[in-house]
Amino acid sequence: MAGAGLLMLLDDIATLLDDVALMTKTAAGKSTAILDDVATQTKVAVQKTAGVLGDDLALNAEQVAGVKANRELPVVWAVAKGSLMNKAILVPAALLISAFVPWLITPLLMLGGAFLCFEGVEKILEIFHQKKPHGVHEAVVDADEAAHKGVAPSSVRAAREKQMDPMEYEKQKVKGAIRTDFILSAEIMAIALATVSTKPIWEQAVVLVAVALAITVFVYGLVAGIVRMDDVGNWLMAKSSSAAKALGRGLIAFTPWLMRGLSIVGTAAMFMVGGSLLVHGMAPIEHWVQVVLVPMGGMAAMLGPVLVHVVVGAIIGGAVVLCVELWHKLKGAPAAH
Image 1 (cartoon, helix red, strand yellow):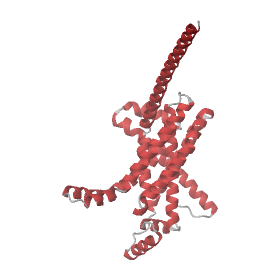
Image 2: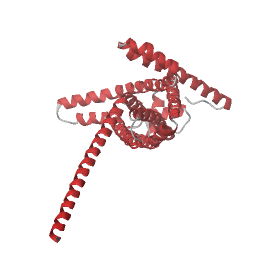
Image 3: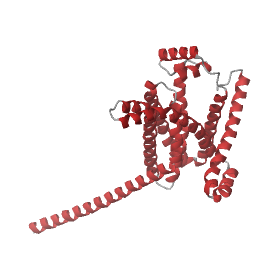
Image 4: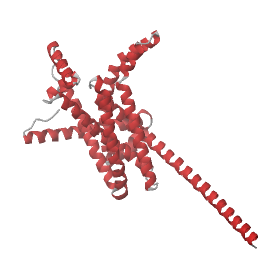
């Protein structure tokens, strides 16, 4: 009897182990499926934010332009850390707003869009407010002061026009880049959240964190590469190969043009992104774009909405600038350009 009882006990243990193995296999399969789903949702979210990523890249590269060469990477790193802090705030904020006050997302994005357009108008106004070109003496003075304070000569000139210390000017430039990143990151988080709005809250959180980390590494890694292209060119020119030397010279010659181009694209992106955020919250204009322009197809459907976004962004941005100018005049303080 004892032997039979022992055999029955062993049989029960074996059955239990089979059940545990089956449940473990099922759980593992479900975990794999969940991970695959999260990965797929993250990929879709990143793809949907591709347009904003391009604008984010152009804007951040433009913000670093003009910084002294040996400080480019530290500045990029400072903005990247600020971007991570932005996303550490935005991810939980997006989840909370989506869960409790989803109606607040559009007004907040519109405020961010208005701010981007305001900065875009100010950048254009700065072009028309530029002082006469510096002579040789002024350029030498600027270079000496820049070398003494460890900043770029362009920062010395810009700081003088704003009646600021050059080092403080560059610090403000970094802060401005982080503010701009906050708005772009908010739009990216909103787009990513929209792709997983029907998923459980924990899956939404995982996807948002994955997207936030991926775009930060991608954007600022690429910005760091862009701003150090001239170093790559010098490295290639030191090689013995004539092809490498030619490529190095080409990179060095191309870098200034690339930075100027990114500056233009970055300013245009402020109106495109800011305008799109504003139009998205203006139901009549958004409806007109979707009903009239998009069905046209071809170039009209592709460029028409962008043109509408830029025009709306320029109008709203100009109105905000006028309000700021009026506010400064009422306060008796000079408005900053």
